[in-house]
Structures are given as C-alpha cells and as structure tokens.
Image 1 (cartoon, rainbow, N blue to C red):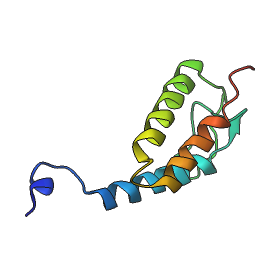
Image 2: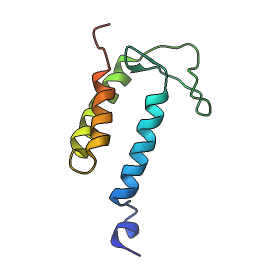
Image 3: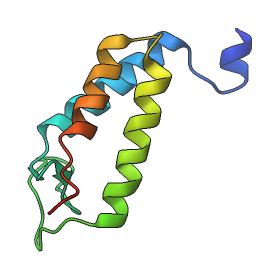
Image 4: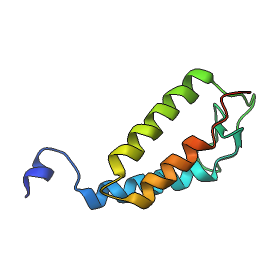
Length: 94
C-alpha cells in the first residue's frame, strides 16, 4: 500500500479523472447566463422548480473554478481550459 493510499488521498491520475467527470456533468447542466440553477434532479440533471440562480452560490463556484484552473495548469491544461471556460461564461451583469 502506498503512502498516498494510506493517507486516504488519491493520485494525480485519479484526481484528473474525477475532475473531468465533474466538469463534464457541470457542462451538461442547464444554466442561466452561464450560472448554474440552484436545484437539479441528480439522476436526470433536469432543473427542479422553482428554478433560480443564487448569487452567493455562483460567486462560490466562480472562485472555485478560478482556483481549480490555476491548480490544473501544469497537471492538465485541457481541464484548466474547461474550468476557465465555465467561469468565463458566467455573466455577473444580469
């Protein structure tokens, strides 16, 4: 057993795979002006009613996407670009 496994951590390849799957799911979700809606059915990804955007949640996601993109630049530039694209699509002017 490796030290990484003993500590309960995952290796870089597993991390990249999980982030890829997460970004793929986020990319599939219906959005408003690039922002995720507050609730989705976890099986079908269909938005649940009432559909609205939380500015607090959007701000938190925006910060997470920027941090993720910075952290991924050397490990996986393609994933970093996808995280950046999701952030760039968020219109905070509405």
